[in-house]
Length: 248
Ligand SMILES: NC(=O)c1ccc[n+]([C@@H]2O[C@H](COP(=O)([O-])OP(=O)(O)OC[C@H]3O[C@@H](n4cnc5c(N)ncnc54)[C@H](OP(=O)(O)O)[C@@H]3O)[C@@H](O)[C@H]2O)c1
Image 1: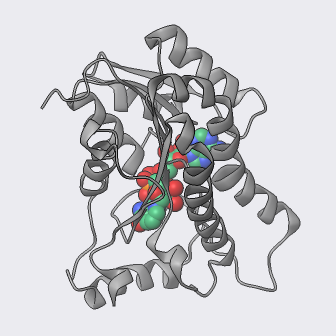
Image 2: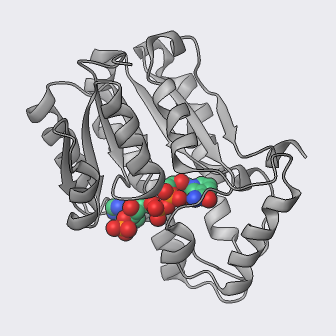
C-alpha cells in the first residue's frame, strides 16, 4: 500500500512503542520519516531495514529541538506533510507529593514540546496542506487517581487539537488527536508507576468491551490513516483507539 509516497512524516517518540509503530506504518506506505527521540540506540533499531527512516536523537524539550527537527526534515526530504507528537512521559503523581519540578517536566515534554514543534513547522505544513496528529489518551477524558499531571497534559493536548483546528483550517492544516486506551508498550515499564498502578491498567482490560489491551500497530494504523488524502475532511477530531474504554 504505497499511498504516502513522496510525503514526509516527522514523528517524535519514534524510538519505541506507538511512535516506532507509526514510523513503520508511514514508511510501509512509502513515506519518508524523520524519527525523533531521546535514545540513539532505540532510534537506530526503529530505522533498521528502513532506508526511508532517518533518526534524529535529541531531547525534544531542548531549546534548539523544534528548529533542529524542522531543518533536518526540510534538508533531508524537502517537505513536512505530517507531524506526529508521540513522545510522552507517564509517572505516578499522587496529590500531596507533586513538586514544581514534576509539574514543569510533564508540561515540558507532553505539552510544551508539541506546541513549540508545531509552531516551528507551521510554514512547511501550510505549504504541504499538512496534518498535525497529537497522541493524547482516552484516560484524559476522565479523572484517574494518582495520574493528575499526566491526565492534565493529555486533556490539554486535546484542547490544543480542537483549538488549533479552528486556528489553522484556513491555512490548509488539519489537526487531530489519536487517544489510545491501554496499549502494550514500554511506557508501563519505563516510567515510575508502582506495581499497583500497572496492575490497575492490566485489570482494566477485563472491563473493556473488547476485553484486552491494544497493540502499538493498532494505534499506528489510525495515525497513518489521518495522513491519507481521503482524511482531508477531518479536523479537530479526537479518535479513541481504546477497546471501548471511553464508551462505557
Ligand atoms: N501505551 C499506552 O497505554 C498509552 C495510552 C495512552 C496514551 N499513550 C501515549 O502514547 C504516546 C506514546 O507512548 P508509548 O506507549 O508508545 O510509550 P513509549 O514506548 O515509552 O514511548 C514514548 C517515547 O517518548 C520518548 N520520549 C520521552 N521523553 C522524551 C524527550 N524529552 N525527548 C524525546 N523523546 C522523548 C521516549 O524515548 P526514551 O525511551 O528514549 O526516553 C519513548 O521512545 C505517549 O504520548 C503516551 O502518553 C500511551
